[in-house]
Length: 308
Image (cartoon, rainbow, N blue to C red; front, side):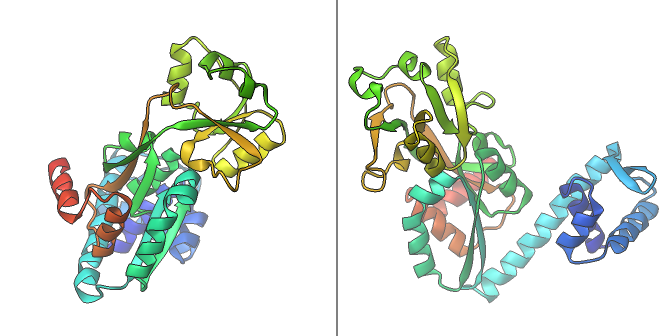
């Protein structure tokens, strides 16, 4: 049993059983991956994957358990490398943040600028996605830290630290009827075509619950993960935009009018998530404190200890 075989198993599962894609991600050949998986299965006397001919079609019951253990071994090896780097190459490394467009565009820039000034030799990557994708990237190890709202806090493998709270606003063109129709209500909002985030009305999210509890079914005509896209289509007159307050810039968005909607919805909390079993480099603690000053290194370590 060899470490690279566990990596191959893990990557094949991660690539939805596509050996070609796994081989490309691992910078090796497809036959090489297939051969190592076969040798591993022969050594332990169990099939990891179900097959139809040469094609992988599923994961066996023992395979599920072995893949879970393989993922843990790979994470532990990554942590060992991080420990070595922490004490051998203190100022260098790679740091990947997964977050939503709104956080990346409107909340993170100041922290990112300070981070790059404080740690100039660290390579910083920012991946964008919806909250579920952000959580999955951190859980799988593709990202070191995730910053998002709602879905991320439901992942058992992640420690989620509350960063800050925010609420919502409605944006409309300057001649929109809502501007002269008195106080904004859910009923009024539901009577217009609505443009909002693609995750706002999936599952049991806060926004969808508020409308549902009021017996309303809003007419969502367009969704996007990008707040700037939402505002673009609002400007074209295609609907009313519902987005985070932080996503409205009074100068950049002067062609639109902002209507506060915080009285319609409870505050939402943005969380910063890390894997509970991850070894955090010093610069990662540094970034966490930049985005959430109430979580210094000692506070993060205390939270990790409680969660483990």
